[in-house]
Length: 600
Image (cartoon, rainbow, N blue to C red; front, side, top):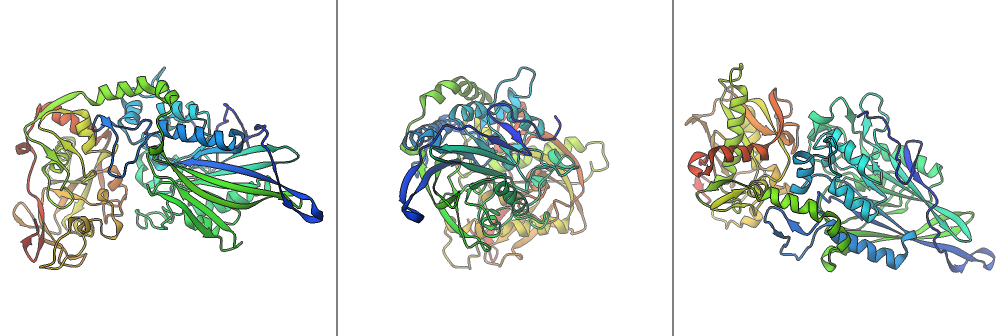
């Protein structure tokens, strides 16, 4: 499908490069305190609702556990709950006074979304409507920003999803790589009629994450480019104001921390939402996404205007709904935003909307049946509970599968004689493959991302640097000090998915030593590693493209890649074996030490 801008045909018409919706229902204007000459000023109250990082969560259901979702904090998930919250707010404020947005990462993240991308794909001839499109259409979303995970299944799948949505997918900084023109609508504009006063025009600018160019390089390179959020906001916000926008809201798939996980590979900041608020004048509020954090309200003062911009990030997976409450006053012939406040509503406080349950019960049942298919038998229970600080056999299963796939792929090539190593991360702290029957959901819970496999060539010295960088995940704990496993990991805020095992070698990580000098007794084949020796590293596409900013891997020569998910390769391996026995894949490759003494 071509990447040029598409007309949005359902409820609105393209104006310029964006989407404009006029003729909304009339909204009451409140009379307030007296203005100049004793006349009462016209006032208007607007509520903008927002979700983000839905990741395919329609129901409060854990497909990996085949049970209702629960956690220790009492959270509940799913668009069916969000629908109930939205209905409540619309009843309170008047639907004609509300706008419903999302900040991206919609069509990836659960077996439900995988099923309709790969098993019964929406792109097939006469294929189904994506469940997320059906649910969000029914709830009545007005606009959704593109997230980085929207691109995981390829541009064709994304375009089909876009076609099925009755709302625009916004991405001002998702541009055609050749023309640099917007490949998706940059903005959405809606007009609210106010009796006895001019209408209120609300513009929504959608911004996505520049990291897409790295994380999904194989799918977007040469087709799409992703300039920085701040740069594009500075371009579009003045245009929206010149078009008469009284209110400008940004829906940004970008966190607030000002940090990046992709090193210096692109000149843009990954989590740039607060910087956009600080440096780009003319924005009233930002719906924040991507970081999977809960921020009820964050106020940032714009450096140029001195005005306060209000930011809010609802918790991911449809666990929270953000409310931006705007108060506008009409004075000197125009509407002015007098105040904005943000708050959150909790999905756990309500029940599922039965309308959404009825609408998608069939799709849900299909996926439940799919993930409960038995593919093998395990001789013992395998768990990731301690996998982030001990060498867990279940992670060795991942690396073994990756090694086998890459060896087979390179057979008969000039790289066939090179030793194959493999990396894997402890993605989940709760995954378990029970003894007995093994199902697709058991294996999906082990590997929760839709990553694919890449083969890169690295030297021994580069592998050593890779391991040193990975070992920064651990806090430094002196010899003799107590080791608290809850404080041992995630040093510097590094997430579990950015800590790697590397199989095919043996090594120790000395946590008493400072970061950068922790890898000890690194050996291949029982002898100290030769820094000049070449290895093939079987690595997931996120890491291969620079995700996590691991050294050398992004620039290393790539000798093979594929589009089949690693999760699928694991299921194929287990199905072929029939029996999942640690004797076939487990090995003790690494351990944590202090001055040569094992920690565990």
